[in-house]
Length: 85
Image 1 (tube, one colour):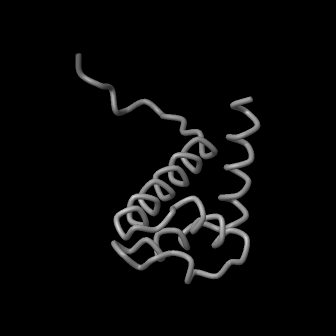
Image 2: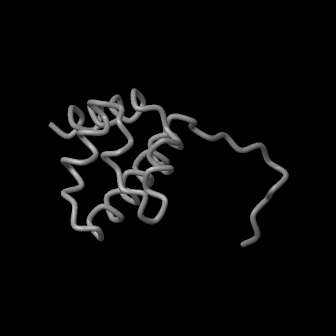
């Protein structure tokens, strides 16, 4: 069945933002793991201190994590943690 691309589509910007944050954190985590770092400790250090030196530049991880405001990352992590309880 063909899709009708003439219809208006609605997008949930909060859901898109959440997906981007998740994707970026997973990419950064994988890059840190490849370099032998503890991804949880490194990402937490970055979020607490705002020091990008906690994140390796391997595979552009440092640039990727800086694409999203730290406060937004922390907010999404807290939401995820509280919603999973």
